[in-house]
Amino acid sequence: MDIFQLFAVGKVKKDSEIETIEIYEEYADALLGLDQFSHVIVLYWFHKNDIPEKRGVLRVHPRHNMNNPLTGIFACHSPCRPNLIGLSVCKILSIKANIIHIDSIDAFNDSPVIDLKSYITSMDKMKGAFMPSWATRPRPSRP
Image (cartoon, rainbow, N blue to C red):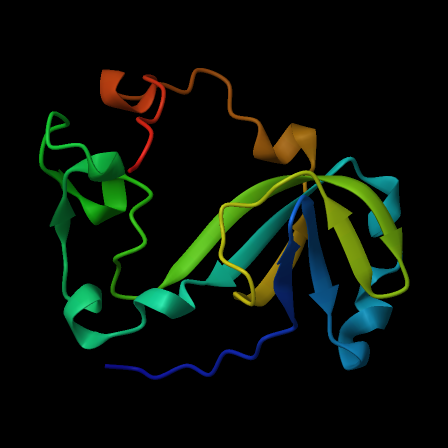
């Protein structure tokens, strides 16, 4: 098995209603021009699931809903995965210095951000995309 090194370039910050991505100072120059985009693709680490047992889970009922069919983790967005990489597309509200204010992100506070990519509509929007019916239903509320 090959081993790769990843370096966090920042972290997710959630403070009540405010959600931001704080980019570490040494990577702040990489934000140049990102303010010209409406959205950003955020790759982050599911740090709260980083335990061997969760890395070994290969099938789940999506969205923690036992009514959904047992599904391989590569066919859903489960945080249990061999490599705990999460991905969210976030609307950029503003960028000030090394702080990106976003509308929302499906990540925990202090989740390490491992990369950002500008959302380019001609590249990131797929025509003819389809998915199973469980993925189109609203997510059930959790207790």
